[in-house]
Image (cartoon, rainbow, N blue to C red):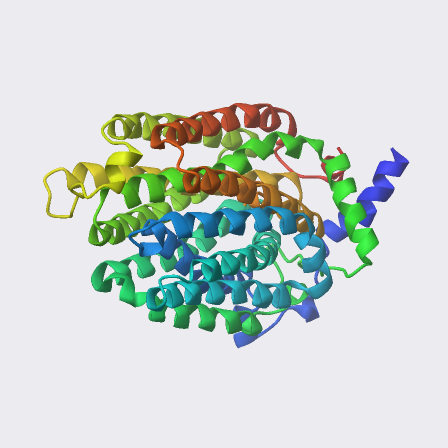
Length: 467
């Protein structure tokens, strides 16, 4: 047991480091009181992701990046998430060395390059290789950005506020998708220049954020300062984090599934059977519903003070599981009506004025609600396992590289997304991709259940950190 405690101390897991008290004289006054407030900082973090990943998902949500031929975008997405999955294994270490602000800056640069590549392919249709290369670069940058984002978002709040802070971030972040989809709906794909300008603004926003060690939580405790040990120590942290919290392995399927679903939703459904104008409106509705899904689960369910945290964890699991079955059961009846071969022909595409459009767009709304609930629940579960930002950075980086989401889950999310986009680029049947999406999501929730039962407690003590 002494060995385990020693290893946890290296992770920053001692009780003093988990909740370091702030001296009364350290509390900022005047305008600094609002600037250094954790809600202000998580909101600024949301706007950073609004300008980068938010605009990116708006472009992805158009299906094929808004292009008639979706093959280039599918190949770029596959290599993007493959590099994301690999570099996410080390992004937690990089974040702890560079600090979150510089990690965020480097991370946002990749989004500007990727958006610019679609502007290039509009001018030079044969520049598909450049889009794929930009996707590879973005994978590296995205791993950095989402690791820094995840460690900050889960370190700022107190234990009882994590669901609320996730909801605040998710709401602002998804405004990028909402605004981007609204612009695309109104101006078609000529909006790429505007997208590029927004992502470039996002590169400089992290410079306006405060260092985490200057932020004081609402309960008077100070956010841990991220330490900068050697690379060897950082790699050892990954081993120790998995050794001290092996239950996180049961979350891997959920991390994998959380980004796997986007390929069918946006390329094989939205991009396959709708006009470009309808795609823009579909994406707008889906991202808007993600805001409500995150607030509903994160703030109204997972942060309910009148209910014990362990009970809230089970409530969240039941809601996500039921929503996954409902959304995919409904989608199955639509997927039966068309194939990839039919969608690639000059067949009629559903437009916003068609009689069948309303029912079809409601499916996008339901799936957007499910997507945000799944992501929110994944982040919340990770936050329930630890309060130490250094340890959370390792978790978020590892999961990022194996999953994606762009939380804790990013590694796994990215691996899931890479697998899904690869199947689409290879021309696998739409129905097969859909069934694998449905089965993976349901299976992931089943794997998560034992972890919720065995690992989630009503409060994270130092003893919990050493399990």
